[in-house]
Image (cartoon, rainbow, N blue to C red):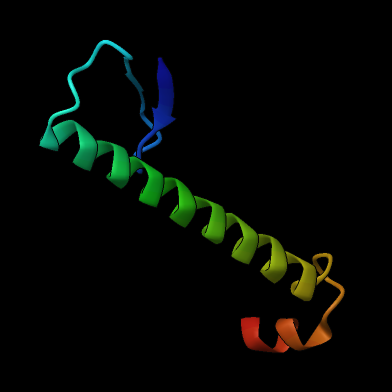
Length: 66
């Protein structure tokens, strides 16, 4: 049994007993692609947080907020 999380953060499982028809293969490929996309987005978010630094540390941001 393989447990996955779809793009809506909803869990679903793929049983070993499932017949590997075209539709289930497409769902598996789609799940893998969504997981890779989510991992890329998490990495981008972490990089953006690292570049931005702690809140209030960059005085230029205060000017933009006005």
